[in-house]
Image (cartoon, rainbow, N blue to C red; front, top):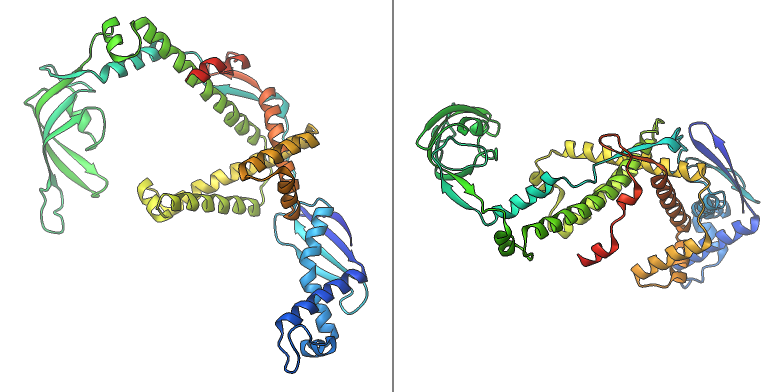
Length: 448
């Protein structure tokens, strides 16, 4: 078999494939063997039907040859794709150009291929990272959260403030009765509520702040779930605030493994620093990809987006099945419509496709290659995950035509690492960020 590839307009490639007569004869013999096994002819045992009889039942030698060619072309097309290193993203349009009746066979396949995008200015990308510095306020906020776990609620007579715990009697009267003719069924007694949580009735927090225990508040609120206005009457029965213990050595010793407040503060600061460093590393990768994607201005083929979208839906359905849910239940829990969810998924799929194309372009622009040793390491890692040896993994990937995809993925990973090491890093104030600050102290990490 001989195959050549030539570019066509519209991001397509035309593959021209020529088959020797011996290859056609082999394909014909395979069809005959299959038919001999499957077709039942009176007077002949399975597998023993003569060729002439089989040709007659198929409509003649020409019809049998045509069947053999049609069955063989998909395999020859796949070989041609591999031989010419073509990267199709859609089904081909195939046309047999010679040999349908006799002699060598030729066919052409026109197929849409993965586009090459441009990434101008990739060498001067600037990535903004969140600040890696731990402030005193952040440490004190953690201290206050720890103090809150051992705090006590105490009555207060002052006006209500955000964060107070209040006990309420609530009555709501609908502007329109429900199906049973009742317009006064939105009630709750001795309801404990944290002011500022915005978790019950729209506008309730604004009404409560500044009021005192014993006050009666009336206001109207538009409830979206009911699609109508409800007149609320709220009685404030008591007001409590969370009284926190003093932040001192005694409290630190009782609430933590440390003897002093200073030691506790130091530990909190170190943990916050480690967390910010890890978050910074994650932000570096995410924001680097986002910056690279911004360089891609070409229109992306719909086939690539749809393929990525299908993959994401398949993966989601698989994860939901593991949790005993379906997509409808998931949408109900998240409060999104199917249209909104698919639009969100599609936007993510488009970004993912752009990132893939941009990284492929970077691989070519920087001539990033994968050494044989690096490929062997990847195959060994895959084998370890699958409980197989590397040679078996390689063999299976080659048979499935997937080895080149593995090589491409590893080249893209190397390109991503190169880009992350090359972008300029600044913080939200525009100050330079040192990559050394993004290194987690290994000793501290191991001690976690």
